[in-house]
Amino acid sequence: MGRHAKSLTVQLGVRLSVLQIVILLVTIAALTWSLLDTRAAYIDEGLARDIAHAVTVDHGAMQLHTDDDLRAVLDAAPRMWFVIADEQGHRLSHGTVPQGYRSLVDSLASLQSSEVHTTSAPYELAMRVIVENTAYGRLHVIVGGAPLLGLARVFVKFSVYIGTRIGLPLVLVTLVAVPWLIHRSMAGVGKVADQAQRINIDERGAQLEDGAVPRELQPLVRAFNLALERLGEGYDARDRFLADAAHELRAPIAILEARLHTLPPGEARTRLLTDLARLANIAEQLLDLQRLGKQVTEFEPLDLVTLVREVSADVAPLVLDAGYELAMDAPEHAVVVMGDRLSLSRAVTNLIQNAIAHAGGKGLIHVAVTEGATFEISDEGPGIPEAERAKVFTPFYRLRPSSVGTGLGLHLVQEIVARHGGSIGVLDAPGGGARFSVRLPGSS
Image 1 (tube, rainbow, N blue to C red):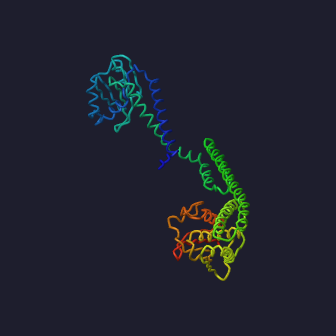
Image 2 (image 1 turned 90 degrees about the vertical axis):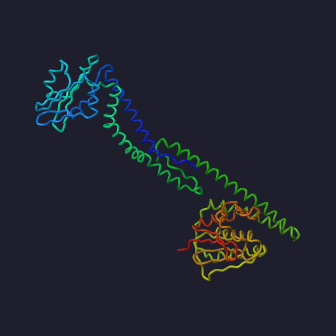
Image 3 (image 1 turned 180 degrees about the horizontal axis):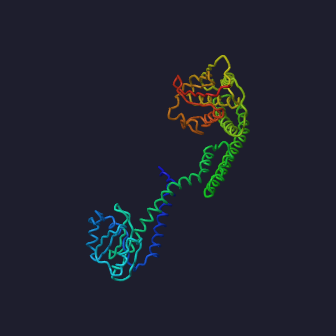
């Protein structure tokens, strides 16, 4: 059992998304490396914001309410210092502010976000100023002596910041846009697939339109067209061989038949003539198959009752000589169909010959024409198992290997009926044999 094919849309969407994420991470890494000095100390902006949001103002007095995380940071950094000021003149400080920053603290309420890096101890000189809007107003925070950020943490923070603002929207747009773009680009593939489904081996010369698909798929379409050409050439060669072989057989068969008739009557001559008739029938069936694929015939109104009665009269001697009885039932009035007289006569003949070959050499072969442009041929032989009924129309298929049939007659009948737009089926006959029912479109 073959594996399910993967969706091109899904594959491209996922791969483009992964590629974009990789490119984004490489870009962030390059920016982090180029913009940041690996020897310098950086203070986490998030820490300053946490300090700002830990402040409450009650009747003009600022208080710091630390949670467990902030308290752990303060305990781990005893030399950390910070000052918080609002725009109403309230202030809260923690730790010892370095001498160089005390003048800045006095003007903290007028400072905007900024930072100072240092490459040597004391790292208390590393400083960050942020301005944060809180529930108690706009707060200005200056922090120093805090745990310092390494390059890896800066990279992670850049990745989160840029990824949420650029990477995630880009991936979402890709997952939406790629299916739409692929659908637009591959619209011609559906058109070519429809053309391929309509290809009929009996109508050779069909080609797929390679200009309807993207350039990358055109070699595949052209290769398929070349395969169709080679297949058509192979079928043409087969048809020519069958036609030539059948024509070449006609002359020696006719000569052999004439010579057999010069033999004295007897069982040997009868068997030889029977075998020769089978050989002649095979040649005619091969010619019929070849003609069906080539000829273009305009159908004409035909009386199905008259046609079947004439064929039955022609083959009656064969039926009787083979040990059968022949009967026919038909309406008194005409049953008109549109068709080709020669090929429909051949179809009726083949069905009667099939009954002769497979009904066991005894019993009744019943031919009937019914209302609704239907004719049936029944026998009283062993019948056809239901599981085999569809296979009997396959070329050269024999229900029983020892059968005297050619394996072409029923296939030819099916081709003729299909050419007329009708249908053929195999049913059980009332006497236990096989009943072939052919339904043709009636004349309007």
